[in-house]
Length: 203
Image (cartoon, rainbow, N blue to C red; front, top):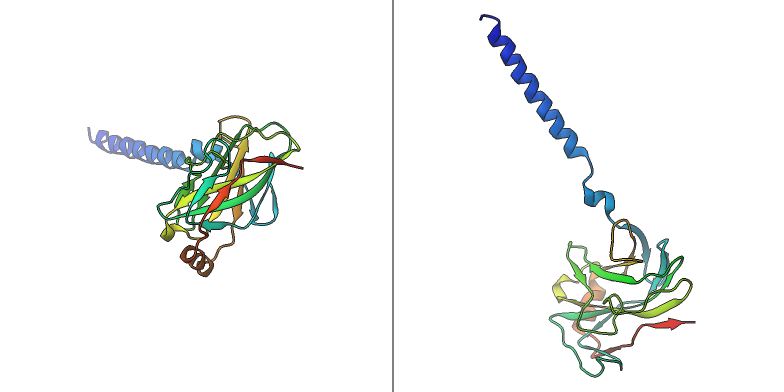
């Protein structure tokens, strides 16, 4: 009996150490989301970004007090935002295969992100746009509704893929190059209205 207690204590301590080691090992393994996050390709506004599956060139962002579809199903109705509209014209081209899903969001320097508005029919990334055929460029505009005080160091993030599955898809991260002073000036005096044309092929 004199040796049973120390042996039992040693066994308990060994089990505790083993459990701690298992917990530490599991915490160091990458999670499923880490393994399957989209693969980002970075670039700047005005330059072509090669995202492997597609290329994209975004033009300078515009700020508006209202937007409306140009012609088509939703033409005519001017939409006012809760904040401002951020409109980013862009040209996007599939490189290898037809890409039926185009999605975009505007990521801010403070961690907030905003999806494209669903109030417009013509905007790119709404799910109603054309399938991107290989080698044929499509031009249009991504449109976001953003509170004025959340427009901080915006980065346009665009993904285009063959299916709805976003795991390990290609994504272009485009710095819009808007500093604090420029944002303040643009939001103080936004464009009165911007008409958004339907996405169209570009020769």
